[in-house]
Image (cartoon, rainbow, N blue to C red; front, side, top):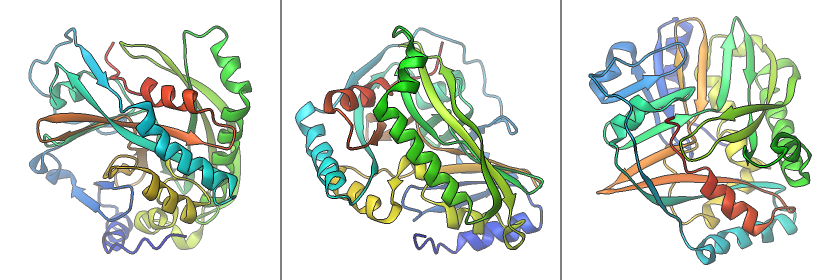
Length: 325
């Protein structure tokens, strides 16, 4: 386990044991653990839209034609980090590393308009700083049943026989198997009778630019008695999320911090809503952040020893989309 000692994990435990609803956001490095009571969400410049909690409805934003321009970093710049990751994979320091970067974009929508118009399972708008529209569930807890849904593997849906190609690609298959095994081990820290319920499920993600197929699995168990009602203690054990880190966790985190030339911040962190009984949380991927007057889209993917540079560079670009359609 990584040393996730933030004091707000204890606050999360106190609230969940008392069945008090709250929303939370935790950054990638687990340095920021922010908690918001139900009546504090909007007053802190937050808007959220999950399946079981809706943001306040804004005025009259209607669908409009939008233009997205992408200015990816050069292949040479991307390759510096990629080669460092591959070197560590060859040395056996990691067997899966999630390598990401930030890409400058231009879009004729505000962050607020992107939040309102996009379609995603987990949407978060934080002030005028970032918007996230994530398709990936981290963990759900209902009546002491805990489940996680790691998403690993994407492909352009327009490719012929795309689903079969994705499921049978040796690199994507190895990556998915690794993440499922990692999350099964992680979940076993806080749950008993852990099992894989669904393997390599394929979901369609629609965007105006192109449609993608994404591959996920579902793993579940029964929350251990000493973790029941303790949302903070559970997240302290499980973070950072394995699907956006890699394995083994501790060494892979060191590799990521050396290879990536920017700070992830809340990108690839997690956000969640506890309604007083049940928990729903998502991994904060598909993420646009504002720095000064510029917008950056943060994206990447899992690298294994089977990874091809050109394919990984293209996957990083393919994931730069806005789900408005």
